[in-house]
Image (cartoon, rainbow, N blue to C red; front, top):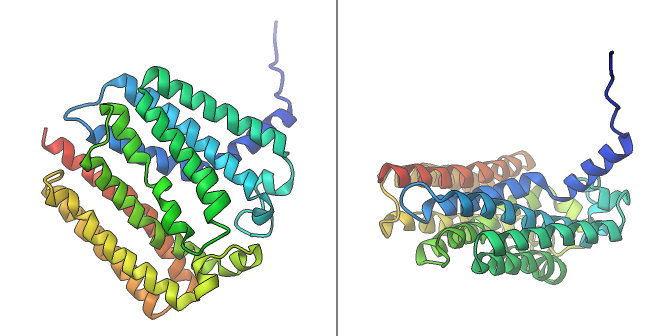
Length: 299
């Protein structure tokens, strides 16, 4: 007898897609990637499977919760910006109650996983990162100061520290070097985006640096932070955390990043700002990947 499967209700699929969009998947993927790199670097050899699997899951859940909460807080701002107007929070397709419930459920589930399957330190650090991003950065800093990206970058730089804590139950100086790399990477990464989205930010009312201080000043700051990032990116080699493979990769990646920042400072164009923004993502991914390869060449 021939049977046919029942089609899934289109309304349910649409709702799932909307809730998934709230988690900012591409942003969270980079967060989780950096956390996993921290896990692999924390100890010699392959990491234990339990903190690797459950640490990744818990950090992913809490990061997704923070992203969803951010969408709720910024729904009016998102609605006037071309880059974000499509989000279901901005269009009104998902209401505040649904988003709060979804964010709360993800956060609670992630914290439970981290506390029971990893360790309490990782849970508290991850929860602190949630508060830092969703409340301190989104609610307090972003609408108040053009230095929001610099100060708020601390929460965005936490993923490798979380991964390190998941594996070792502590935060070492080496984990803080990874934190510092991402912390200094964040301003040139985000200011490149803000430069070619300046009008969007102007309409939103957010005091982003290109809006408050102009393009030329922002480009200078992006260049200076790129130079600081270059110096800090060499610290893993300087403290014998990484070897020759990493430092060669870092020098090449840094040189390209500086070239983008210098060119942007000298001759601005939206296309160049877009290229620098996209390269910054490639830069961080390849820098951490090179660190991982170097780590395993030693063992």
